[in-house]
Image 1 (cartoon, rainbow, N blue to C red):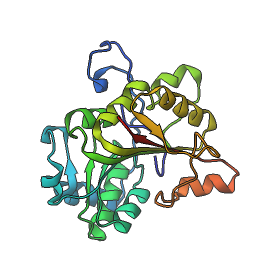
Image 2 (cartoon, rainbow, N blue to C red):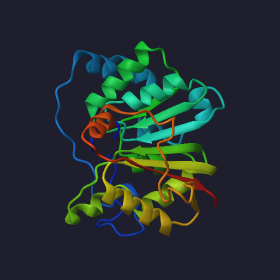
Image 3 (cartoon, helix red, strand yellow):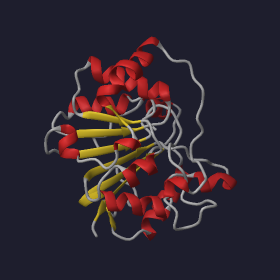
Length: 248
C-alpha cells in the first residue's frame, strides 16, 4: 500500500480447492475497516466514481476502448490513500493507470484528487484484486503491475494471508505483456526475503537486479516516495524493491 498497510485480495488457498478461481478460495489478505469519510472523499465516491470507477460487472475490458487510445498500462494493487498513484498519473500523462483498492476513504480521496487535477488517464476498481485480474483484465495487456508496501502479516500463522504467493505471481505473469514488469516494495526484510523466494521459484520471470544488489534493486526514480516510506526512513527502516520482468 502506498499510504496505509493492507492488501485487498483473497489468498491463494482455501476450502474450495486448487481449481477454484483464486478470489473464491476463502482466505482474505485484507481486513475491511470502518472509517470516517471526509467531504472530499464522499464527493469522490458520489460525483467522480460514475466517470472513473469500474466494477466486476463491467466484465472483461478492452483497455484501448476504455481509455480511448493505445498507451502503456500500469496497474497498482492496494494504493491506500492514493498519493503515489496520483503523482504517477500526473507525471506520466502518456501512460494509463488502473488502481485497485477496497477501502472507501482511499478510493474517495483518489477520485477527488484525480478530478481536481483533471486526470483522464486513471481508472479505479473498488473490488478484490484477484477477481479484477481474473475477470476484467485481458491476458498480456499490462506493461507493469505495482505492489507497494503490502501488509506483511508478520506472524507465522498469518503467512497464508500474504498476497505474494505462487498462484498470485503466476496470475500476474499471464496479465503482463512479454517483457512487462512486476514491481514490489516492502519495508519488512522478512517479507522481502519471502517475495524473493516466491519469485525465484516462479517460472517465466527474470530478476532485473544486478549481481551487486540481487535479489533487490535500488528504488527506481519512477516510484514516488510515500509519506509512509519517508516516515520509516526517519526511523531508520530499510526498504526493499524487487523488479521482475516477464520472459516467458
